[in-house]
Length: 145
Image 1 (cartoon, rainbow, N blue to C red):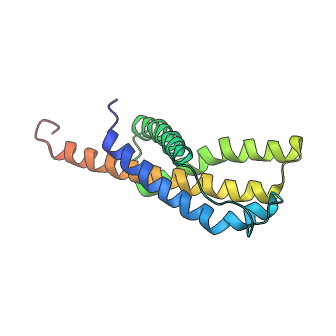
Image 2: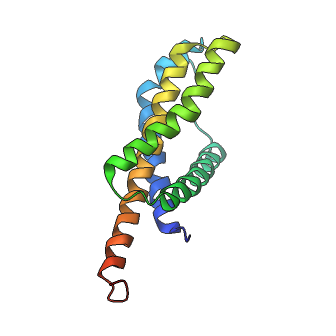
């Protein structure tokens, strides 16, 4: 299977922007839940942190592209189902384990769980759209028929 790196890069950038918007909206609440005063906290994010987050998201994109390609996900409903299955299997299970066994605050977990649903959803939708375009193009190829 060949992974389209341009699609992964597009999915990475979109997911990074969506995640940034998510945490911009929930950042003050998240700081309060961590016991930090949002008014006095330094809210600058270092370029290194942003670069590492982009790298993490790119790696996630490669993994999701593998699943989308292997499972031949090319429709939006299948993309949503794959996202839900992966979300339940990983972030949900890991976060609930942290809540149950490590006394991790459930309100913080909910904020992170939301991000970890919308980020892969956006990425899988983009990757499945690219997969759909490839499949449709392939079906129009006279060699395919």
